[in-house]
Length: 327
Image (cartoon, rainbow, N blue to C red; front, side, top):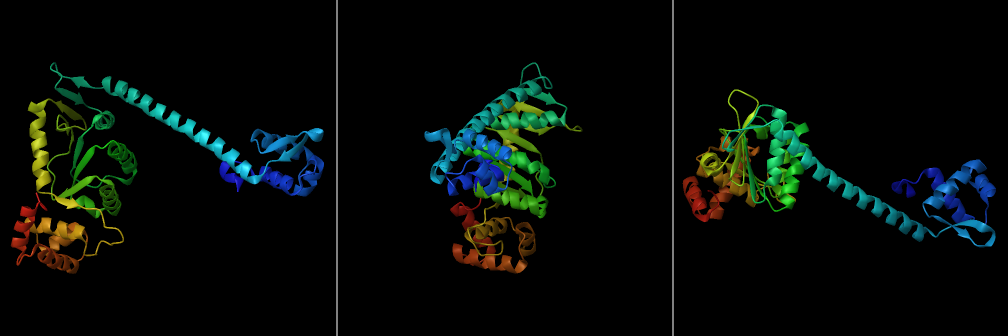
């Protein structure tokens, strides 16, 4: 029982023997637990350090404290350790931000007006992205064309997403339709959507980019692994306009409703189908994008017609736009 607090099995064994035989001395305890008296003496020292035994005034004899008091003592000590650990982690995070600042500053070139930063090293690009995304206070947007993000790279990005969401930052992401064919990526994005990230898929996102507050953009450099950091409305506005245009024609990836499966007829699925109907997509294409069967798509189409009181796919799309279901 006490191993969860880091108490060794032999130490707990001696403590339990003391509870069962409160008058036993070290030699008698050694016989009860099958250890050498010297070993029992060391265990008693450990128990004293954990405050699980106390000195009896008569004869200066050690006595095990009651189990509920022992548990409370261990819990108090553990909570103190966790509190100190949390403080250390928070300090490490603050120190990390300073290290990232210094690392990026030494490897970034700026133009004379300070509106464009040039970064050649992809490792520095990642650090700069981390730095800028953390600076967002309202909205951070990502466009990720191409293949799915590798499994090994998902953890750090998920932690950053969690931090931003906890601060109330709106997160938007556009991913390629083909990337959703990777199961690990699809499941990750679905989980992120459940946490509040706004995720949409597009047939062919035209540009890898990141927008922070619509006042700063990161775009790749042509013909290199580096990136440009753009600042100021004159440079950022066209990038923001591109993102918004692609966002409007992308399909929402909605979190699964509680207790449902990917083939269930849910409100989330119906809205996804309506968004695709508004784009003129055929059943087969919708099935591929939503990773469901064509039969399920047809059931969802029927459900959408009923929900929108529409007599045709076209009418359903028009009605969905009027209702604000689709941009």
